[in-house]
Image 1 (cartoon, rainbow, N blue to C red):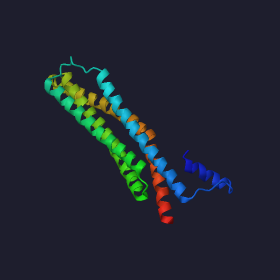
Image 2: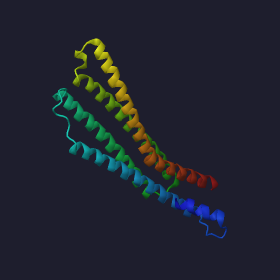
Image 3: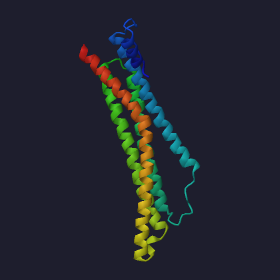
Image 4: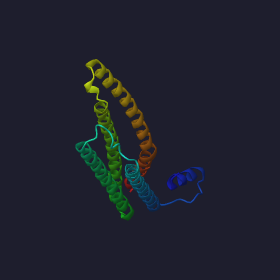
Length: 207
């Protein structure tokens, strides 16, 4: 429970409970927002290191018949683009954290909260789109690895449909897990940021 929510509960129950002035509330919201964005930054950083570690420790299937220099190069380029974009988002989260932490201006704080919220949404969508794209590529590569198109057209059609359905189901389940993960972590943090934003707007309107 946030400090402000804790105080509100006590104010409702006990009129004699010490009140906090607007500046004190604003400071609490400021500290809370800074802490939330810091956690967003930490989580995204951990995700990056986990991804790099998995790439390092899990060897690629170099014995695959479908493996080629061109395909390997494409794989490296795709991974490079992915990590560059992830690093860009991490930089944005870190910049937002530094800005929120160091500002005393309510308008700047509100702007930073909105920017962080937008960046988190973009980060989540990017990861989901990337996973979907990779799933499609994996499905296509399976067609070539199994030499499906060298078989009779009837058998090839059946194999294409069967593999596509299986991969689609796997992708949907995996995306559901990913969305659940983001909902439990990022969305939860963003919802707290939204609450802080609304409280700050209320304070500004009352002045």
